Length: 255
Image (cartoon, rainbow, N blue to C red):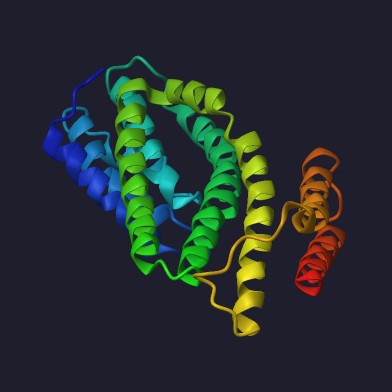
């Protein structure tokens, strides 16, 4: 594989933060993505003169979760190096890009935005309700730092391993972990609702103790059942939401 200088890789990585800047209704993130890839593609194809052709392979359509952008860029820079050396047919890149893009798009939206981000948000709100703004700020900063670390690591793994990095993602099993996080988020929501109820009743949330276990058993059991139904048997979400709201109402009425 043709080695790309560190300064070029750094430029591509920093540009990955601007992938959404060129968002449009036709190609979605295509302009931002090709802008981020451009320094690497120009270096790879500077001798063969295939820079324009390489850009056309990525300009049609791109739409994926922003945290996956560095991984995509690293993986396809790896493949473009093989194309420039004649080790990989360029016609396969378009289909390969669409396949991986569609796969990781749903995974990113489900795990990062639909599960992990919700968990951090609920924890943040809960810490605020408990009168711990310092811990809430620390959690926020830790989440931001973890996202940047993930971007750096995924970019490097994509560049050094190519599409073999998908094997790492498969072993992580993020889909199932995201489902468990959603169930955990339902429990966090119930706990947050409890402290909101205390605050509405004029109670001191800092000095409040958790309710007895038997008071939690009913609402938490319903929340766990709702999560299990949605995850295991794909129970309709609108009915699941109604059951969850019923659990929250039951909790507040008991207290």
